[in-house]
Length: 342
Image (cartoon, rainbow, N blue to C red; front, side, top):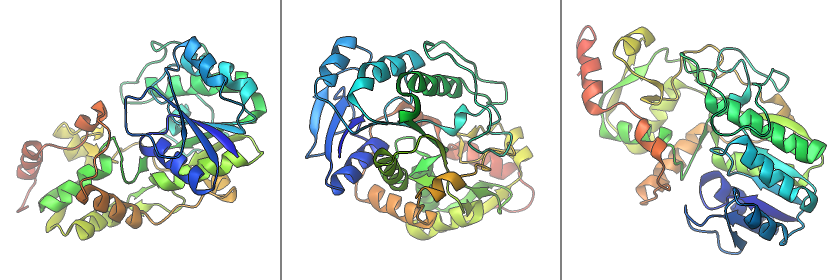
């Protein structure tokens, strides 16, 4: 197999490259050379996918058996359209990393791959879409739906779409799991969103990468929801963070209405917490039937802490600063609760 990875130097893209090399494949990466270090053993092409001349230069390095696009998360549909159109004749298959946010009903309702998508033109620019008052739908979701449409128009049934929710694991650049780990390690009373038995479905970056590479070698098309089929309760998640870090913390289960009254932002200040009914009701049966294997999330938690303790650091990203309640705000929340919390 000879594949092209759009991206390939950090988090998911880097894992896709590593997995492909483990299988003995020939890998070309296309990056701007701004984030992360390239994986040794790949053919590196530098360029900007917003520049037609750079895409023509890239196309001259083909053909490929498959393209795996891991770098379109923050690009408008018209840029995805430009890339897919420029490379369509040079690849037999296109594996596109999308998101569960493309669904019109997320995060309010349970989802399958047949659930309706948000509407966005394939040639939309970065101004298209909006974010609702309750945080849904999102402009990001509209943009990613338009990106999917652009790939379909260029590749047709040669395209496959992977729609993950939350991806965690070593080298995570958003900061969700690292925040919980560092908070657990600090110890003391920890504000945690009730209920304790809430099930969450994040997936390990290495498992997403393996499935993406599997799909590059497959022949089927369509879309796959990527969510942990069994998940983990919030109680077990927090307990695992405490155990792997050796933290002496104590969860203080706090009702959602209290967190709301204290102005805690869902999804960011309290990572992985969102009260919408369907946020963690994403059906991944189709992906599991096609070979998606998700390791226990306790392993993801342990491996991420080991990476963090070994001086591992992600690429710089502005979203990192958005995640986690400050110690001062957490102290105010604890002080507002009835009874002793120390």
